[in-house]
Image 1 (tube, rainbow, N blue to C red):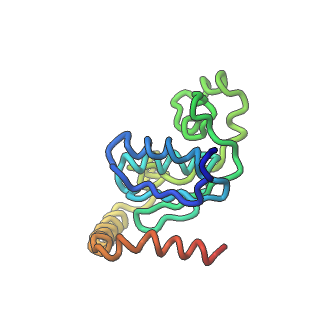
Image 2 (image 1 turned 90 degrees about the vertical axis):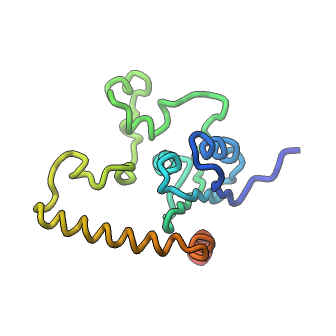
Length: 180
């Protein structure tokens, strides 16, 4: 007898590569359509890589981020075969493949199935900065960077409190339940 599909999965175990990805591998197959996947600590690069992948994947709809926790809902898209390869069908690979002409050989028509980008990847502050295009005068950039540093410091103080970290996923889950 097979186990009942899961309604909710929280990935918040070891943060070093590839442990979160291994947790995902074992759980994604068991989450029911409409079920929720919660990924904590998306600010850590190894987890952020998985977060960026999930935002591109057709199996998931990104619901929201609360502080350093992301919420995804399982779509009706077919489950990615856990025993196959199929890397060329994964949107994350399609979007980040250096030579898109080579992708045309592996997966004709892949460009037509691409959703809009989910946002900048880790390390890219903005699309303009990623392309090397200044988006504001230098003085304005310095003021923005100073304000960002101040807000990050304030945010770090808030998120380092035990009560805030413990209750953040619960607050988001309650918000999600209220909306449905």
